[in-house]
Length: 194
Ligand SMILES: [Fe+2]
Ligand SMILES: [Fe+2]
Image (tube, rainbow, N blue to C red; front, side):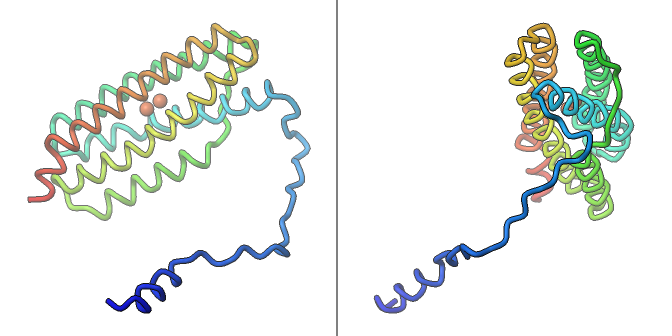
């Protein structure tokens, strides 16, 4: 390749300059918008409470669609753990003197919808299993990010008992992610690639 060609290829990869006159809208807060970290913390707990309950409903379908016995049992075990996590969140609400209630988590609703699409887009067997693991790991990563934030909020607010409970759940989500990773790398992906 000539130097001039190299130069032109490099140039095409340059990002376009950001327009400095772009109109940026500052979002008006809703009437019930949080004004303090504690309110944001409680709103976020309601969000994950809805998400965990949605998972309790959705995980059996994921397990039933898995062909690998190891994957199916891992998902079912995490289903049992998820029910404990719902109860743990109720304990957290209790510690904070708040009523345990859910608020629709659009992110989890979207992740579960994507999980359903993956089932439709794959034939049963190792390829569908690889899809189920992909969808499940996106869910676990969302939960890891959420509980990481919740632990930090709880600690900042001096809610140490709540922080301990949320840390336990965070560890369970990380463990589920690791187990799914192992199944993918050691069996499912290998078979799916054959
Ligand atoms: Fe969970
Ligand atoms: Fe989870």
